[in-house]
Length: 126
Image (tube, rainbow, N blue to C red; front, side, top):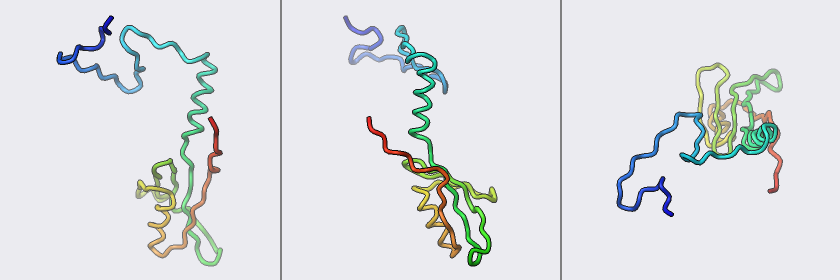
């Protein structure tokens, strides 16, 4: 029997309704059963967050020969990019990596260091 939710080829159909952000996506007339118990679902979300969480870092400037130092910018590194916020709150930036942000800021001749706050994620196996 043909699926009544699909229009036959060559037949115009109405565009699917657009759900507002945060609205669960369920096919009409076919509710999706919950994934596990509330506790199991919470553990799944925690694992998801841990796996895809960005790594935090700071770019610090050295003054003199170990006389003083300061944080110039704070950042978050994702797999595909890094986001940076200057500590004086004057600017934010989007970079390909934390290292590329450091290279750009170091062009000014300042003595900068990239400091990782979070440890590198451990390799996981399926």
